[in-house]
Image (cartoon, rainbow, N blue to C red; front, side, top):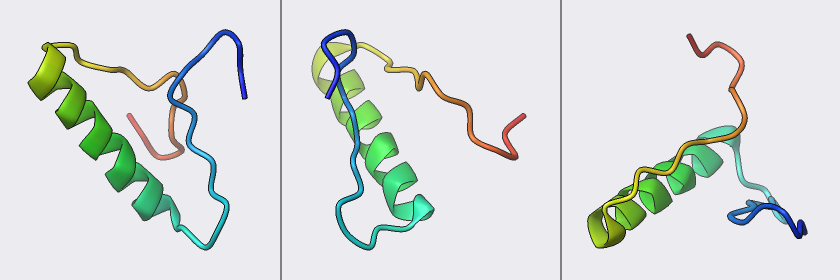
Length: 49
C-alpha cells in the first residue's frame, strides 16, 4: 500500500502478466469513459517501445 500512489494491483493468486495487463486496460478504459481522464502507467513493461 502507498500513501503517495493509488491504483496498485497486487497478484494474490495465480494471475499471469496478460491478466494484469488486461485489468490495467479495462480500468484505463472505464476511467476514460466515465471521467474523460486517460490514466498512464508509471512503470514500463519489458519489450515495450
